[in-house]
Amino acid sequence: MVNRQMKTTFTVALTAAMALSVAACGNSNDNSKNNAASSAKPDSTNSGTATNTTKSDKKVTITFQNIYPDPTTPSYKMVHELSAQYEKEHPNVKIELDTLNTDQQKVKLKTQAASKEVPDITIVNPAAQMKPFVDAGLFAPLNDMLDQNGLKDTYQSGLLDYYSFNGNVYALPDGNNIEVVYYNKDLFAKAGIANTPTTFEEMLKDVKILKDKGITPLAIGEKDSWTGSFLFMNILLRTNGGPGFLQDVMDGKKTFEDPAFVEAVDAFQQLVQAGAFPDGATSIDANAGGNIFKSGKAAMWVIGSWETGAVDASSVAGKVGAFQFPTVNGKGDPNQFMLAPGSAFAISANSEHLQETKDFLNFFASNLPKKQFELKNAVGLGQKVDGDLKAAGYSDLAITIAGLFNQVKGGDLSFDNTMNPATSQVHLSSIQNLFVQKMDSAAVAKEHQTAFEANK
Image 1 (cartoon, rainbow, N blue to C red):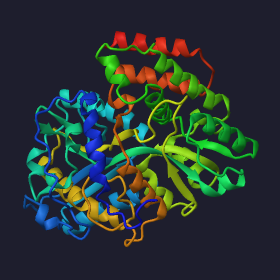
Image 2: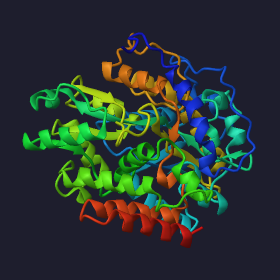
Image 3: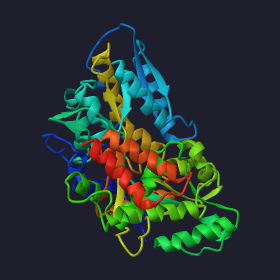
Image 4: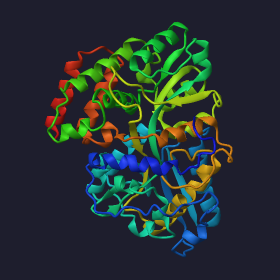
């Protein structure tokens, strides 16, 4: 049973586990680890005046590209409220929000990067995904800004390493998450399912029961292809018997044609063929897919713990629990998770208002922990927060997720945070295609290996 007085210091436990997979990032940095002794308490807001290092009355517009499009979510409220607060305290500064969903933002940023017109602040993913932008000199180092006001010490120890290259930090993460299976307790009861599945075989059985009852078993929005990949990687983590498959491929110890990968493709296709997902899944984007679960129309949702606050703000609040992804064919440890160091805020090296943008991001990041805590969205935060979840009115779901963080025994990063972009794109398209047609699993594995060898 999870301690109902669980403190948010559960976040530190995840960082230790994530350190096991730092090598998989392809990260080349000599940054020292962050000091874990300092904490940013929920009531220790830094004022805008304190964080501002430049005094100027010149009119400045800062374009802030972000991925929080859903007005019902705490993250949407967070970015709007902090931006409005900064504008109020700095009347000469206008924060212009460019809000997109995740895949839209990735595509737009690639176009902007090609013309070297990156917005003042943009969103990047860690490790392999952000490295090409850093190599192209598109992002400004943030070391000087992190050294102001103790901001660097608010981040969990080791987390900034995922966003660092050659001793420089280039982005500030918004979270640090694990992937879990959310489930609707009412829909499970309606289908007569008494317990959550602990094996993949049980999950398939539950999928069939739910399908027969007219309930969508698993919500997903596979138009944004990372969603299917994330689910698939849970299966591979199990069939491989633990983390490190992609690292082994990169190190030449394994190939994608290894039995563990073929077995994972087989299992994934079993879910598809059992009718686990909504009809037309590849035409539904990630936000709409999530809303299938949050509106009570799907029984399960395999997604990152960053969605906890959004679930608690939805119509299924109070009806949702969470559990670890099950073993597959008797393989894997349920306490090994897909690890998800969050998307992060980077500043354009070519910003016309570089110092003003750094001042704003310092304010934003310094105040983000308190704001997210207030919005009941601190579970999975990348910065340290000292607070009592139960006393603050956090839900049983949030406290359950906090308990799962404490059980983490390592895991893997996502495919596209580990492999190079060209191989990752082949992977994303390949998994997406499995929603449309059944394929020979060995052929899918060979497709991956061919792409890897062509893009070393």
